[in-house]
Image (cartoon, rainbow, N blue to C red; front, side, top):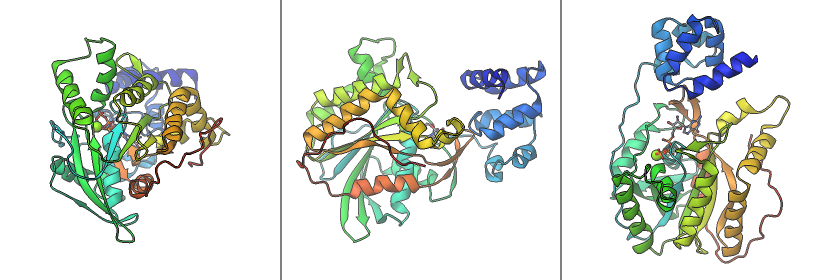
Length: 381
Ligand SMILES: Nc1nc2c(ncn2[C@@H]2O[C@H](COP(=O)(O)OP(=O)(O)OP(=O)(O)O)[C@@H](O)[C@H]2O)c(=O)[nH]1
Ligand SMILES: [Mg+2]
């Protein structure tokens, strides 16, 4: 790839209207139509489906060109379909007053929490790791139903849901039945990434980021998690969104949010209990292979990225697990399947099945674990 093309791709990712930028660059002869087509097909997440649709409608390339260059026909057929805001847009969890393991997902906006949850639900309903999953009457029941319609089953083609707003927080009360017929009550809690970030903004006086909705959501959230805290075991899944560059959100880096979030939950006393688990999920790892330098093992590449960008967060989390005898501690790779044009997906539950297994595992608290010395290297690909 020439430097000029590299710069074009970097700029394209930054543009709000990527179609408009691509059109201009083609018409001003900075890039040919063939080059654009090749780039869009080689990295099928370079443009979102709306931008690709506009390119087709405008005649920069055709739908058949996309298919001829290796894009799955099903994704091309879905190009006109808009992503709808189908998920309920407000939800408030007052307290959790039933006995069940609580599972939280923490991470910055767009890191992939909701998609991960959707795929985990599909994995739990798929019959491969759990015999069955039932959902009990709860605040997050409609949320669960809609999410399960999107992430319907293995290989299902779907349009990914949009963002979760700060006041949309749902608790889904489920019972997972393992392959031996034992029940595991588990509550899956989907929080908005904005809420996670708001804990930092609030402490650092970033008032320009904090709207009234954030403040109310924060208050309700502390009430649920701290004041009305349950005695249930709690599994916290921290999400690192894999990306080629340092990921930023409203002025702060992802590692800053993660470290702060970990510290915040620690200080609030909700993190460290021997019955708890602390895990790290690295989402969007389907993008790793594309970015791995030629001749390098993608496992080494991803390990290196994590150790370079998140050493303190990963070590801190691992230390807590060791010291307090909690389960977890090491990063787990994750993806939701084949993602194309950023918001179309063919669901694959292979990675999510591992999470379902973790949710059903028996944890033996207070067995002091050896803290990890030095680095880690996991086999992912
Ligand atoms: N390539 C790829 N993209 C993904 C994956 N998971 C999620 N995405 C993309 O990331 C976007 C955001 O994912 P969400 O699950 O909505 O993110 P979130 O963490 O719930 O965001 P908030 O609700 O705003 O906190 C999706 O619309 C997809 O475009 C994945 O496994 N691979
Ligand atoms: Mg979400």
